[in-house]
Image (cartoon, rainbow, N blue to C red; front, side, top):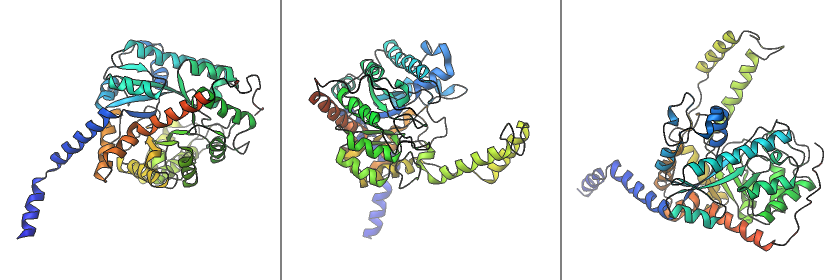
Length: 421
């Protein structure tokens, strides 16, 4: 009879009750600790899709109804209980250096402009204390990340100007190897960082800007970890042991990161979450090239309709693998296991990867669902708070302390250009 009573008691605990319990816990956690996302490409997406209308478009709601839906608007940021956001200012690494600088400044200005347009929602933040103060006031702390070392065109004076305008981190490379650092997704030229690249890391430390290793080769990661006096970040990367993409972070680097005190902010993009999806995506790209590779190759070169129909047929025979919120949680748990729970955060990459996102993580309103999944797996509230924002705030404060200790030091190699690529 006892087991019948136990079953009866369990049946009384409905899933809505459990969901309410998780929601209440999440609300308590995120009231005390801001949820901070390390990387959102909304700014660049607005520039690319809206053109000059980006300065005046209504950002409050409804951007999910656009022909190409956005992952972000103010209503959904509020629903997702976001307390702080690093807005990525990204420009193509293929542009000439001066053009990269111009477009970076335009995007920094766009962040300043939308913060000014919605002062009840956003406020610019520079420090960990700023973030906590802004969050306590009920606004979203807006930080800026520059997503590529090519964006300061080899001039540390330009880098310092970005800092003065509010930039909080620099991603050392994007998709291309540059004159002073190897990228994860290009052929290496330097074996990591050049001497000038090491100077960039030291100058970032002096300024109090975070060193972001999200797009760099493993050799560059190792060099930066060796040189940096401050904790580093991976603003939007995941675990390589689960998905063997070179953008992701190996267990070797995760262990070194723990000693450095830094944080990996887990990326939601399927190609960095699911190894099956990564392989499928590579196969699909190869098939697209086989079908139509202008100007000289491809089975249906010059016949785009036939090529598109053939690719659609291939995709029917090779369906896209499912990628889920639970797999994102797997990456978080792996990083917490290898590096420690003090060294993992959230870096969604929203509005930077289109709308091919894990089931259950389609936009900025869905962060609570991820936290609930971790709670279901047994995560304590204190550890959820570290993941949500506590860890990146600790890293920011650590970088601020290093910068304070270097106050009065001369700028690094102010007039020394990078080595030729």
